[in-house]
Image 1 (tube, rainbow, N blue to C red):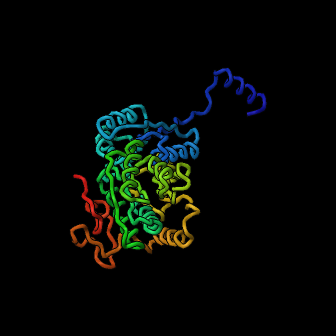
Image 2: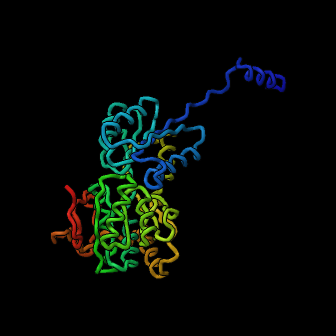
Image 3: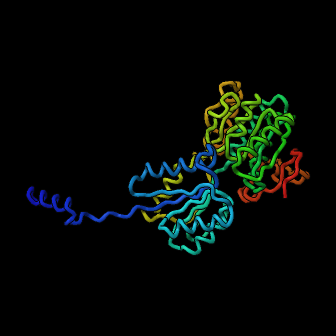
Length: 357
């Protein structure tokens, strides 16, 4: 095309009289969140992954999210609404969304679905999670090393295998460095409720706990620990700012790389159902900075454990391990297989508590 023709084409385009090259419609990517994006924990970190998708793909994608979606009938409605409004890839980011995701996926076979922390798949449903128990192992090592009361408090959400597995991992690690440690556990029956989480932390401290661990989503426990002068470990996101003196470390969920990879697969047509369960070695878990008040030898021990888990030379569930009743779970020198871990529904020997039914 010569210069005159180029100029004429530009004028026609500007006037709307000549069509330009066809632009592909952006891939609509939806996220369903159990809490608010401002929880500074679980949901916040998933939303950081969503923002990473936007940064990576620009106008090739259009992302949206729905926050504070209860794990029940509302989840079916929200997921279906995203599918109905043209979302080609939908991430549902809490365990209780598993069955709703499967039900909606059956109605929309041309939509790709990804469910976090669940185990049910379909031709158009993939699953993904992080090996949170690896981070709990490091948390337990730290807690067992710094406690002076030998009482560690644990705020738990729901008695599903993911949470039970985390408690057991932290307890085994703490006992490995301090045989006198005991755990006190409060179940709050919620993922995100700062009031309940804060009250649970206070109750645990009143019972003698001087280190607080949590499997809930807000920084409320860390704030209580800061006020009461005890230690705490952050969950899902870096919670340092909420209790800089109390904060030992945070075990951070890193979803960004996974989300970018799966969106790329949806864009280039290579998306397929899969089951991803990555930990330190896959950078799906990372640690925040350690508190400078932690003794150097304790940090060195924790870092050595993290590195060994990442390279595969250390497994947090290495036998011999018994359950509360003395039944053998993992033989001496063996490691728990993924099937056992995914179905874990008993406390390990030494935990003096009952699991809620």
